[in-house]
Length: 337
Ligand code: DOR
Ligand code: ZN
Image 1 (cartoon, rainbow, N blue to C red):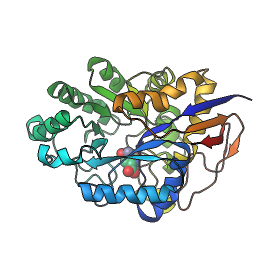
Image 2 (tube, rainbow, N blue to C red):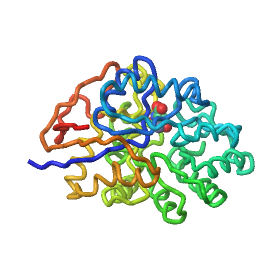
Image 3 (cartoon, protein in one colour):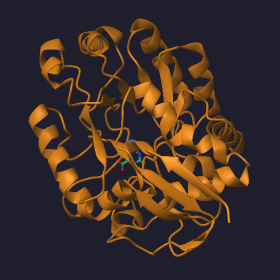
Image 4 (cartoon, helix red, strand yellow):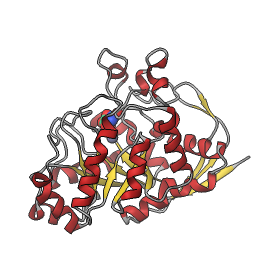
């Protein structure tokens, strides 16, 4: 039997939603992760301290007895300034910026990336040490959207050298190269973008449960992402972007974007790293790098994963997970906290 013990695993990009969906999905992440960066794209989005505190409270309630820390984010608005953010700085781990309309519930995001318009908010964040997470896609041709956004990341990285900027869920080899040019650029990588390419989504029969934003790219992009993750590139963190939608919203004309990976994330990562002979790097990818980058000290938790297969349920509530109904090669043996 092969096993790996992970200390304080972290998911630095997670959608938990609200209401019944929150109650269904939160325990799945809370069991296996020590903490997660919680995305603010609810309807309406989380844009002030009161909303943020109430949401954090609902998450903790839904997480139950699991020792789990939700690292909270605000939904970026250009109107944020120093006076607004300063009293919130202790309660927020990052602010998430969405280009308007680019993905699920992002309608209230930013239109046009004019550095001067964004300056007051980004200078305040720099001063307060609040990282900026960005969904980096333009409104261009779908396969080019992330690549076209890289110059915007670079312009922001140069204009705000003290601001930590996280390129969220990167899918493109070009984004990885940008990391090397700017000390204040970091990135998250999802599980699904390490596993699939566009072929898996649309190359045969359309697979709605693999449809997400940004869309999976070419084999050489996946290869570059895998290389960075498996070698625990120090500027790269695991962020699942686990994004649950009810089955009727996925298996529909007008399929919602998002892959629900939370229940299988750690076992599948362990299987993937083991297959490549890189199990010893997994701790860095799922915890150490994020702790360094975000300067966080998550609750103590020890997760033991073993190469004993598990059967993935067809559904959790209304949501279909990655590998639904299939057997995966690894499973969680026990969790201590
Ligand atoms: O596929 C996605 N789903 N990408 C995102 O950026 C948002 C997410 C969601 O909230 O459903
Ligand atoms: Zn997301």
